[in-house]
Image (cartoon, rainbow, N blue to C red; front, top):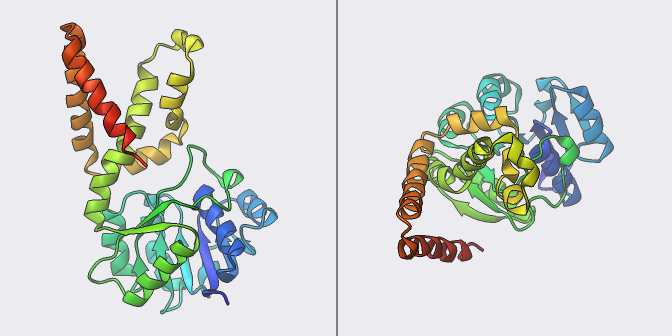
Length: 275
């Protein structure tokens, strides 16, 4: 039996589309409704089976018992007031935004049954064309519940993500953003910065090292500018990276093999602890 009768997804891109595919594949909802700004997205989402119905109008969410906000952060914040007037009183609302402090602070005031969530899954690609049913299998999903979060809503959202194949971790919105600044946002900053530092005329000589290290620099620039600006912890993460980079720079300039080898070996060992 479906957990939800009607799920509405606002933002049917990579994550929203993958959610639709997974929810339908696991028979978690009786019907999945997609809302997008683009008719082409709606048409393609229906074609691949990510949604049952689609609309360009927000009013399509009105009968949902679960509303998933899978749009960019600024769009979620902008539309939240309108959406709160359209949904049923008991509708559970969740999101998939990459930063949580601002989202949670505003949305739990707007939606009585709001539960913040962030599945750590995705790609440097963007859009419904890259949606995958198994995108969340084996991923970690962070739930950012607060003291104001409805226990019933939290339990249902947690069950949803477990059903989609995720492991669950619960953090405060502030903890989430502080951690993501280092493990997600800093790597993107470095990838963008690294490829920006390489002279164009040298790129023809690049091999797998540069390609692998800068893969995520192919991510959507406007989307990532929005994410980075919404996380006040990013400057601290950048400073930590600059400190480490400076140590390596000094060791190279001083031709200090022992110090350089120690820095590299420490980094190598830390890298090996990632599961």
